[in-house]
Image 1 (cartoon, rainbow, N blue to C red):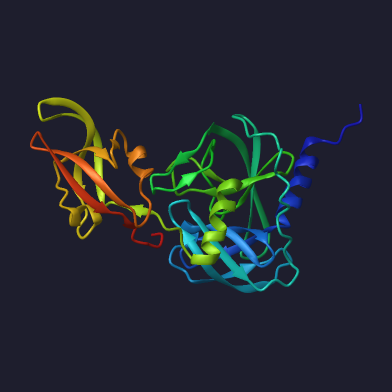
Image 2 (cartoon, helix red, strand yellow):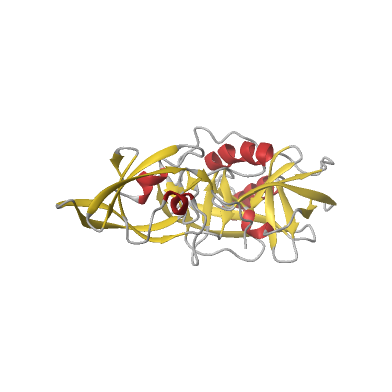
Length: 296
């Protein structure tokens, strides 16, 4: 049975993906970017840190100036614009209908050194789940976790399956031990906001809270115990205090932090039902945009 050896097939797939991968280097870190469209690369926000400009190394070895057009630490995504000289091929957007990633699938990450040389790392998918909210408050359309960490220089690298279909870009921002793939669907959703506004506006209350059972006017209720309130935050301005229990939000049970986040539309005015000292009270709060902070 005549069959091309597996390593040759995988090498071909790496070569195809590498045509859409550029190198990025700041004083703090080396990373990679994936050319999403002509003159626009998607990269890891944590690799770029506070940079506003970054050298972009094209597949033909040419180095051009890149400008950071937008950054979203919550999804670890950044967009870099650069002068296209024909040295990079925009990623083919043909992943629709591709086989969904599965635990155990062979995957590889492709980056590019500042010298222009390609580097790659090979492994497997360690976990797959549905939509996932990062600890920074961003929503990934799917959790795809790698079975190990990322080598230096592979932040923002293209992650592809054995057939060379790019699943997304590599991030080390959400786990100390495992790389995570920021999926293509999330990139497509965030990239336009970054190009247009330079950031993604997210609602903000300014509290930390944890689930608790408490008494409210003699009745046992489930809510969220407020454990901290940020200075000059919407919660502080509304009069919310550490020790209050958030029972309802906009008339619905607060229940969980995830349920609270569903109501965090910038500019919305919300009625909060709280238990303070075991007695019911009502506060009114206006949601503001989360303070924008660069990575680092």
